[in-house]
Length: 130
View (cartoon, rainbow, N blue to C red):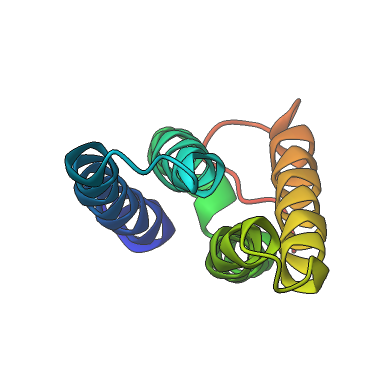
């Protein structure tokens, strides 16, 4: 696994490791108040990023596009804003960062959708512009 696929997989693995440690910490302290943030880290960071990694690995022509690079940046930014944003919202510090992270995460998925749709019908081995 190379390039964008590798970056997505590395981010996914880092996310699940942090999520697992966080889950153990919540269990040890019997304080599950931040479990929604923990769940978003695992779902967006591990599950979604792993799916992105496998797609880009399986379709290297899509991974070579500029749109895929934008996707990686927006997805990573979305993850690093939504998780602390949810923590802030749960602890009464405001919802602004969670809202921003939500919009960035949605934008990331829309960009991924565009990447996938652009590949539909394109000859295998032939890059799609952008």
